[in-house]
Length: 183
Image 1: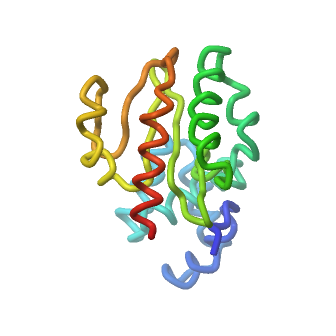
Image 2: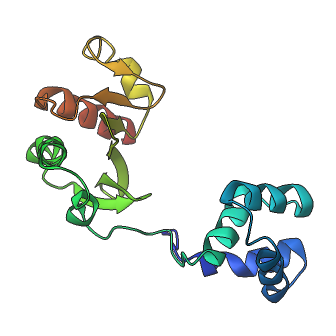
Image 3: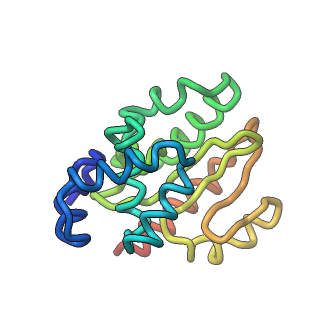
């Protein structure tokens, strides 16, 4: 089942779990409107036992953000980025899709991701000074550690420069390992 990005989708669970109608929670948020986002979330968690997800949904909705979904397509995702980052991200996904044409490029968690037979296999994220690439299975990073020795490897991601000369074989190996683990 796909996650519903609409913040309102949390409201029935919020009412049930915390025992008050949404009208009550909106009044609480009105009383907290002068506080910053982290203070509002902390208040809901500490004073009312909210989970992070429920607190975030209520706070963001109250601040005018009705959905967590920001991008529909890769081009939407890339709009705010410069030409160098756009070129690198497109080359990253092209490298994998050239070997695995049955992969589907989707936006999930507001990031471009590749799915293969309905399963996530790879994702990437543009940051200010670098790009993070991530095979869906973090074990793949351990499996390919010899090929990754020249990169900054984090727990679940690999940091590459924004102007990275894309290593197609490395990316295809990452995808191959994840697909192998799916079988």
